[in-house]
Amino acid sequence: MEATITKICTKCAKEKSLNEFNKGNGTYGFKYDCKQCQSIYNKETRERDRERKNEYKRSWRKKNREKENKALKIWRENNPEKAKAIRKRSKDKASMELKPHIVKDIICSSLRIVYRNTNLSNELIEAKRQNVFFKREIKKQKQLQTI
Ligand SMILES: [Zn+2]
Figure 1 (cartoon, rainbow, N blue to C red):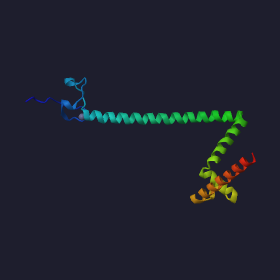
Figure 2: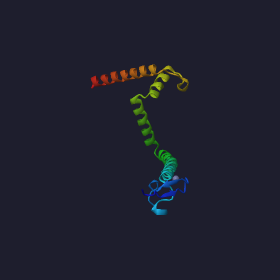
Figure 3: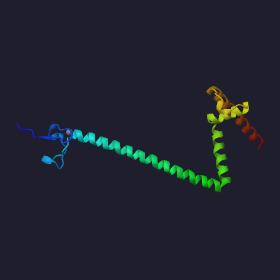
Figure 4: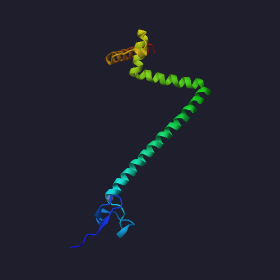
């Protein structure tokens, strides 16, 4: 029977057989710390790296958002008409899609009530949405008939 050569891990200080070590530059041509300690170490390193990367991405985004906003602000100041047109277009798009907040806006203005203090049920918003769609559809039909 072959005698098992053992090695003491420099990390966990446990005596382990050689097959529990990866090949490396240490004694008998194996690493100083065992596979188990290495995998723990690798995992920690990976997590630390990931955190560092996320942190970097976050700060990059933040820095560039500020830069972008500033550039956008300057552009808007220099191109007020274009900026207005873009704002109007995106508002029109939102109103075409009838997002809940748009519908709520329509209800509030028709009832002359303050938007932010109003608690409208989803059913009411949905009913109004259908109503607005219906009106738009009628309008479209009328336009088609007059052409
Ligand atoms: Zn170990």
